[in-house]
Length: 113
Length: 111
Figure 1: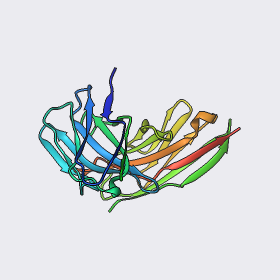
Figure 2: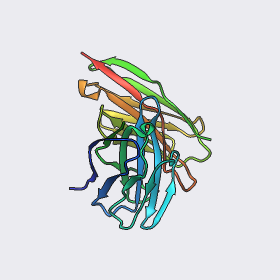
Figure 3: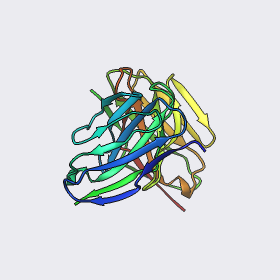
Figure 4: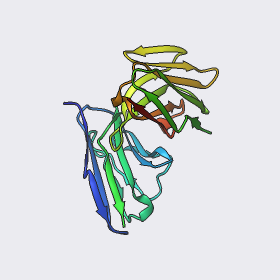
């Protein structure tokens, strides 16, 4: 089954404790990206990757890192999480930057205390 | 700059027709998307318009006017399960951020 998976789905952590949210897709998609979704602000892009070893900042990259060592995986790293990073995070992928749809993962609800 | 506007909330009754509008201002335009998102779930793709006109897909249709920076999503024969947020998103021509999302319209369908 074609899908985008994220882990963990829920996480409660404390300020400053490094964490990684994994994202994996099995569709051989080139383009992957991370979004955060907050009430009243909608979906905002954090980082994106157009292919292996090619990543770039989105609208709200501060406090996040990503890597793309393999085509299928695109982890989101919070080196020192802060409470303002409490949010619902979505990973998404598409065949390329210019195809007509992105497929979203199920979401990761992160709470930073 | 980028700006996408859509109403925050709408209500309708089962069996009715509802139109959700979206206006946008972007520095380049390369397609407009509509996504449906149920509370706590991931967005799912509904429609894509890149040329002016109407795209019909079952009970859902989407319209685009590039000259006016305007789109709408039309939902017919509303069902309770259509209660969700509807997200308008615009893809820009420049490389980089693939999709700029509006804040979404929460539709409540009552019986």
